[in-house]
Amino acid sequence: MVKELLRKLSNAHGISGSEGSVYSIIKKELKGHVDEIREDTMGNLIAVKKGNRFKVMLAAHMDEIGLMVKYIDEKGFIRFAALGGWYGPTLYSQRVVLHAADGLVYGVIGGKPPHMMDEEERKKGVKIEDMFIDVGATNREEIEHLGIDVGTPITIDREFRELANSRVTGKAFDNRAGVAMLIKTLQTVQSPLTLYGVFTVQEEVGLKGARTSAFTIEPDVAIATDVTIPGDHPGIEMKDAAVEMGKGPVITIIDGSGRGLIADRRVVKWLKDAADQNSITVQVEVGTGGTTDATAIQLTRGGVPSTTISPPTRYIHSPVEVLDLNDIECGVKMLVAALKKKPVL
Image (tube, rainbow, N blue to C red; front, side, top):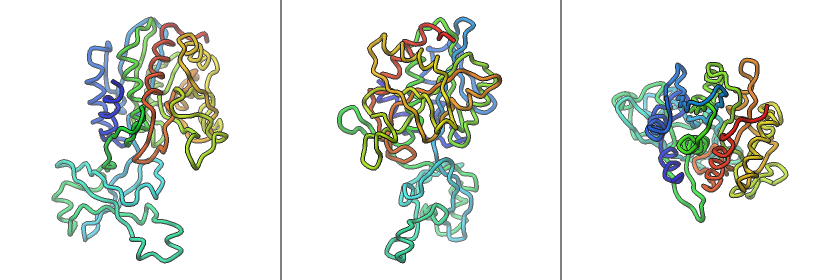
């Protein structure tokens, strides 16, 4: 079931550059379902299903936004750097996991309590640079004894939970949802094409793994599986994000207002035709927000026709992301159907 797979992936920890625990799950899930699986120099995990000479790259990034130790003071409080696009208020008062050399250490993100803030400080909120981590230590030596040092990765201490209907919540759905979609596709698909399932690293800090892996693979076409923002909850309007959770996976036409991906319309048609022919409901988007691995892949070598498929996901880049499992399932069905034949390019 996709629910149990997503649970494992969401509960796993892997910030940019430290994705190892995630790809250990992926390797286990894909054993016996692909012809080859390897890790490249950057740390991308590449799974290959061999077919004809036409190469399709399916990319899903493994990394989640996180933190890293940058300074330890004499009283044992830890200052950190943010890796990826954090919004400060979502971090304040969170519980965290420090992935120390000697094992996991738990702590909390602290800051100046509201009781001690003046009116102007309350309006502005606590900035990331003013936050710190408290693991209960009383001095720097105790921190060192715990195996924590500058460069120790830090993730949010949050676990997957089921909500009403087919909705679930957890951390790192961006992009463990895309990883789950790609795993399920590779487990299911029978294709005459050669498929490269690439689980990329360091997407959240510059689309780095997608860029290097696409250069090596030289695909004929590429699809990234990621998440996208719906406009179906308070605080955001459909005119700004015209897709809804539970209404099917989303095919990207443009993201980042065109500064990111401008999808190849032939690839979009290939996917939409497969969905129509198999009675799969899909949505399309012209996005103004962020971008995905597809942008880096599209610009590799002489260019790669590309797009992105995403389940709409609420509250992304927070520890309480929410999605509908049916959107992932339908995304898998659409990919499996499309990959039965190559696109007309």
